[in-house]
Length: 209
Ligand code: TYD
Image (cartoon, protein in one colour):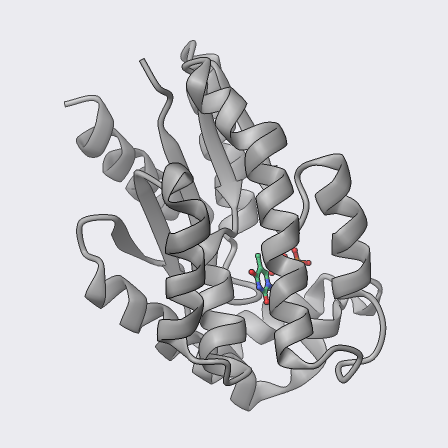
């Protein structure tokens, strides 16, 4: 049987990466054969493309170039890592995936949500997630949390400013509302344990009951 594919989405400082790691650990301890991966990156080629994307000045790439770099990285990631794992019955947990492009390039950077969705679907319909957890947090709180990680961790995208982050939150909510069969919104303004319990319940309800 093909493995399950779960993606974690949300703005900066939403805690999704920590929660993805926690879920992966608990499922693995329970005997689920899985991989934990991330975008941009995940495969050797995609990690090289990641460096081009996240390093440097905010204006380094125009929107089209940036979007195509993300898509190129995703294509490699799917072909080399995600699909082989799913086809071998392994679960895949991925920190950011197609919705990050729809939000960041489509809505926030202005390429158009419909256009990015169209590209995602036409190229990656063979590797769409079974479940997407959308981490929803007040953008000011999220930004403050991201800053706590320290300036050394600030990526090109962390530097875009507060307006950018408010739009990210709205955009994610819009995606979740339009695709309720795949997406579940998680209130990320709570404590680690509460959020983890919520995530476990959502996953159990979807795949184990
Ligand atoms: P990263 O440091 O991985 O961010 P985070 O810890 O928040 O996941 O940096 C990746 C950045 O790339 C992040 O700001 C979101 C952005 N991004 C896009 O703009 N488009 C995409 O398709 C993806 C996958 C990420």
